[in-house]
Amino acid sequence: MPEGDTIFRSARSLNRALAGKPVTGFRSTYPKLTRFHDDTPLTGQTVDQVESRGKWLLMHFSGGGTLATHMLMSGSWHIYKPGERWQKPSSTARIVLENREYHAIGFNVPVAEMHTPQSLLRDGRIPAPAGDLLRPDFDPDAALERVMARANQEIADVLLHQWVLAGVGNVFKSEVCFVAGLNPFRKVSTLTADQVAHAIAVARRQLGSNVMEDSPGTIVTYRGTGRRTTNHSDPTESLWVYGRNGQPCRKCGERIRHRLQGFDARVTFWCPQCQPMPVGTDFDG
Ligand SMILES: [Zn+2]
Image (cartoon, rainbow, N blue to C red; front, side):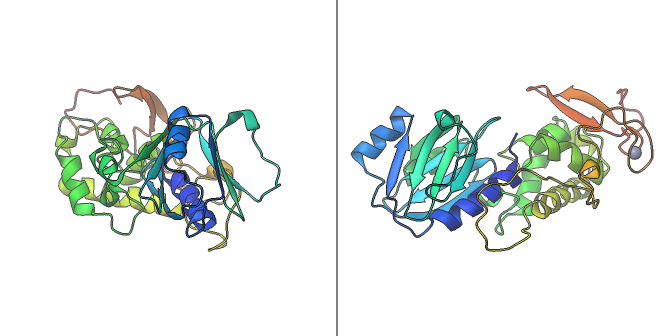
């Protein structure tokens, strides 16, 4: 499942490969996109910018249109040199965007829509730039307000909400709560503003450290996800709690627990010792 860091890296690479260059070819298996292309050809337009907003990837074209894609569970964008062998079957290619130097292929991209500047602003699902943890113009005070406003919801669920904090997915949800020392099932109303502000800062740091580059400025044609929240370089020790049910906590040795949480029943991992519920709370976690 791609999270904000993965989409950010994809957008950064796509931006380097596509921005400022005229589009020489566009194909899609989505009738809505090809109809748009028939009416307003993308070929000949320039890609102005590719950016991520939480888990959405936006490609802005010089003609004023924006292609918004969301990867959900299965989608991914790859960049290839013309003639380079694709690493996924061509039958799963949903969108192909070409310039003279690069071909960008959207494999299994389940959500793809063309927007005007107006429809982009009106869209209730695509976060505004200032809500994205990975952007330099991220506004932590406004994010704190949005979290605190959800007093009756559990903190881990609120962290997942893309309109509250764009970028945190299911892995980071558990990792952020662990590092912040918060039980993921605590209602926001039981937390102080300082605790929430700290959790937001942890989320920003964890996502940020997962988008740092080994070779800044290069265009990466394909890369797996080597996500890491601990300081260990060993890939088997890269996460604190996520996916570690029943294994000993890396800090205290207690057994890591897991449980489904929230409306979507997403799995949450935590250490009951390092992330206790406050005394007097009716909860067995
Ligand atoms: Zn622990």
